[in-house]
Image 1 (tube, helix red, strand yellow):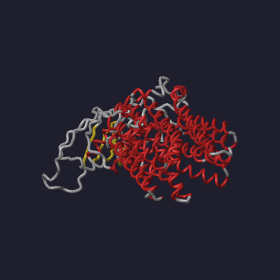
Image 2: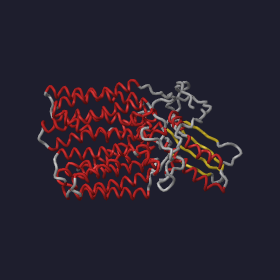
Image 3: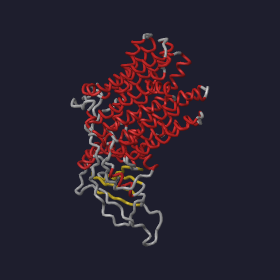
Image 4: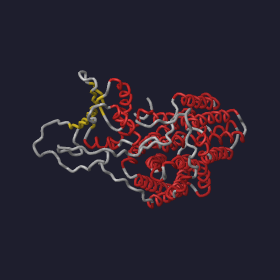
Length: 561
């Protein structure tokens, strides 16, 4: 499927031109005070979450002797991030994102406080611990799509790479420091203290979100139903080949690269024959590499395209994985983990930015949620897969197999490269004029059929069909159904494009979703139209029964733009 089929402007490919050399510096997003405040609060909150995870895992070893129950602690954390992300994306696009984040943080504060209270009172059980850990992770899953989609509200478009990179760096800082702090807190002050610290950590971001006053865009249309919004997000994803490609590359990398973190305890124990202190050193090396990789990310982006950075990250991580399996030296292993961490943050932040810069605001939360589902799904499946491979065939075989998958991801990029969109204008076109409606319509009137008439000269038919294929995908992406293109057998120059939408509201919403980037396709079709009069548009509403006079609702409907 061609990426241009979605009505997107000509993107640059891996072998094409590089990104603009005027890329923002890595810390550019910190110029925005609100982003700086919320980022700092997010780091504090995520660190508290890592402390809570350490406490929960250790508490489970005291509550149950079953290895399965201990493993379920990690599963209760990752499962909501896979299952609930798309629901969270619908909420992020349908409601004010600040309110969604506040609700998620308050929910996590309440559940964490309950968890700490039950532990301190001595009333905790294994299944209750899993349930509360699961609900805390539900709050995290609800928070992330709204938080990442809010970058467009917090910083200018040119600072989005910086914001995404700093967000990824913040998460890796917490992954590096959180377990160490958590272990110290649990050993020194007890498990209850770890849960109390986590509960308190949510206050910082709650205060930051409460103080933020984002600009609320005027809502001219009724809010989409949950299932309608879910269907619209999936439909947009299915019609956006570049987003699909980004998610697949993210899944491949997450599936293979998680082997390094999942098998790292075995590397410390079996390859290096070391203790927990060396394991902590290895974790610190990976986290330090991620932080340093984030700091040089902008410089790398100024010299390489997104696809070139993706290929480099796949290769470097594969070599680092092989090095871990065969080199039994602590400091060389730390070096491998350092470059692995740098590759990890560069590819994840770049793919995240590619999603954010490739979709319009109305569906941004859902696309980020789908991207997160692919990433976390790959990691969850990879953790289980490489553990099974290591147990059955050995640690070295697991790392070699993961490296082979990474090299397959490298080859994928030569066939389906990730495309860069440095200058796409995804703002609403806002050129729609309300038709002269002479029927009593309300927001639910429908179905609505639309027919557009074209006059195309015989010599322009090939160009018309090519442009119409792109236009068809734009229509379907934005909500059209049952699209068709008809040619008059008696007057071959006469063409009719037709499609349906479920209701009058859906039609207004469909037209409202058209972006400035789609305008060039419409201009091309207009230029090919050779009729003496402009293209004629017919909008017709379906009638399933004859209603009594005056029974139709005449509720006022907001005038579309």
